[in-house]
Length: 159
View 1 (cartoon, rainbow, N blue to C red):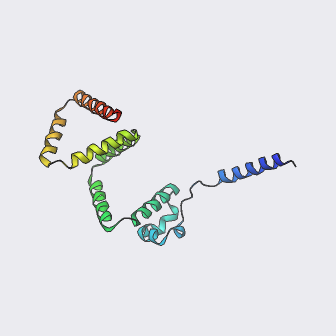
View 2: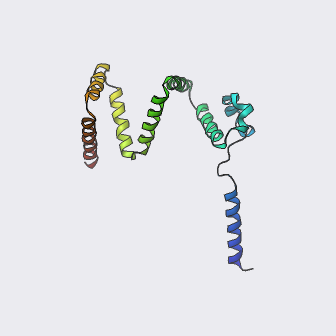
View 3: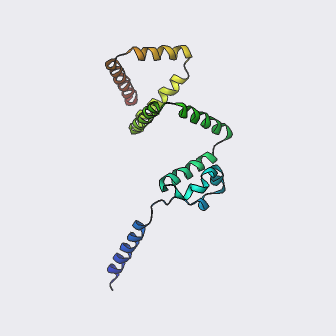
């Protein structure tokens, strides 16, 4: 057999093997690290029955959790409790906004993060006035306001 044909067959066989294997196989319970098993111990009995995608996400989450400091874990628990107390419709809106945020260009996301940090450091009374002003705007006024902010940001980035 000539060399080109052998290489083509080997490539096809390798491609077939790769395509028939799961891209990222979710770990079995035994494949989890001791730290991941400790964090996920409540799921041990049903772990192998969970969908692969969910097991993969849970394993990555447990890995991240293990890397958090005690203070970071405390804050995460606090945020999780607050999240669970939200009504379902509010959670849905938050998720939608987050997905919309992720779809923005990186420059816009960076600008929004900067504005958020600026707003967070304001005195409570000033924040209250800004929120009230926003609530009093019509949808058209809000749209015009957002447009002006985007134009200002574009002008600053062009300098």
